[in-house]
Length: 83
Image (cartoon, rainbow, N blue to C red; front, side, top):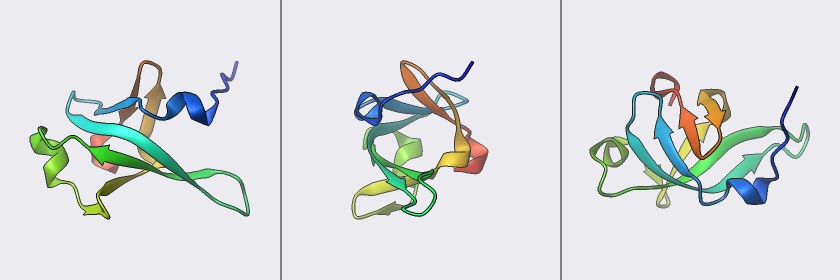
């Protein structure tokens, strides 16, 4: 069974990697106008996290490809290898 989540419920969720590194908080989604599918998640990096500061930030945000997302519940879990 597929669980549908409203985008508003995702904003503000903490994003962590599958091996426990804190990335930051979800700010927005990049969605394809043609297909309606999510392309990237825009993350406000946690500046206290060593891992997050190593990621390439554009305009203050880190782009995480949707393909890297493994699970969404209390946290958004991303596969570190695909980031």
